[in-house]
Amino acid sequence: MTTTTYADIPYEELLEARRASGVPMYNDNKMKLGIFGSNCSHGLMATHAESSYELTWEHTQKIAQLADKLGFEAMLPVARYRGMGGETNFNGTNFETHTWAAGLAQATENIMVFSTIHVPTKHPIVAAKESVTVDHISNGRHGLNMTMGWYKAEMEMFGGTQREHDARYRYGSEWITIAKRMWTEGEGVDFKGEFFEIKDAFSDPKPIQKPYPVLVNAGNSPAGLEFCARECDFNFIAFATPEEAKDTAARVRSIAHGFGRDLGILSYGNIICRDTEKETKALLNHILDKGDWEVAKMVSKGLGTESGSFDKVKALQERFILGYGGYPLIGTPEQIVDQMIELNKAGVNGMMVGFLDYVEELQYFGERVLPLMKEAGLRQ
Ligand SMILES: Cc1cc2nc3c(=O)[nH]c(=O)nc-3n(C[C@H](O)[C@H](O)[C@H](O)COP(=O)(O)O)c2cc1C
Image 1: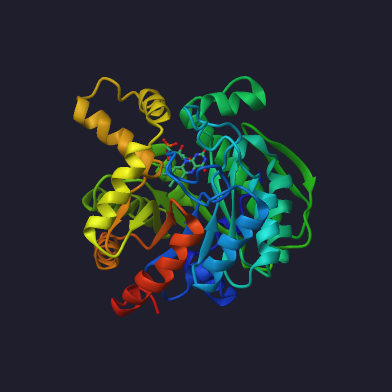
Image 2: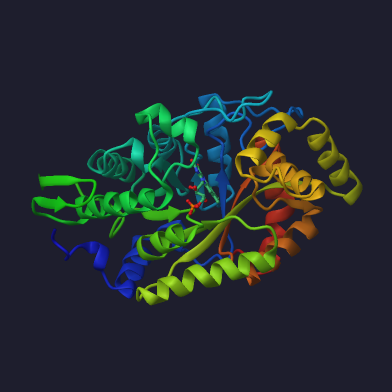
């Protein structure tokens, strides 16, 4: 196995290449913004509450074009092949994310278009080639979010068994090493590892974005954090409180420092925002009253939390309904910005957000919240 790859590029050089490429995820905004989950039915909210959101291509483009116009940095999809069950079969109708990104690349001008990929479902040479193609269609605006696949029934659709947890990250490490070599090396690539044997492999053209598309991963376990700190540009974290976000951000960055590099921190959550606290509370209650508690219960059982205290389990189920366990931002426009400031201080560099009604509420966000974010110095 050759060891001199672009994967070993000194961090300062990688950063410089990314900045020179002009990719939005490396612009000067202190708090980046992305739209998360608009490729799946019900987006990030497991509820029957009324919304104009629908999974059609026309609607998908509308959301992306609006986010692009508002200066958001990213469109980031969820990788999903199987619904999570419950009354809504949450996320059960979904668009494949490389082709989704390709379509949105053509439909937008500045925003980055990410794919989210379960690495065990696709050979790295194929995925690297698909990413390059999206990078060319978008003129250097592609990013890749890698997941190892945690949802057993979903992964078993592909091969009958799922690897044990840390083996998934060893597999991911070989996978991304091969992809990086496809993106950066000019000569035939040979590679022999635990999972892959590659002989004299080529991939041209190279990405427009240098040295390769922005890489994101949501690893959270020790193996996941190590993988992300070593290989990726952003760790996509979940947390319950800003203090926890601060701890996780510091932990993954210190692991990266051990590899002589650094990385940014992203997180996610739905925005529930109205002019007054009363209206916000009414919307929040409505979303929960109409929540798909069946899927929330199934998911919390799957996470092994059924034996916790009633309040703790209920809180987790609420968090699932309100945004896939992300950190929901709830309040008036001023309160939303205060929460963003707090998260930014905790080390979060970007929030990937969803809404009950992506189009309607994104418009409202643009009118009422974005100007306050600018005033607060979070965005330019
Ligand atoms: C912000 C975020 C986004 C994620 N997106 C996906 C996804 O789209 N598809 C998926 O199968 N898993 C997704 N996951 C699950 C992660 O890939 C991973 O399994 C989880 O964070 C647990 O980390 P670990 O593997 O290090 O234990 C996501 C997790 C987080 C925190």
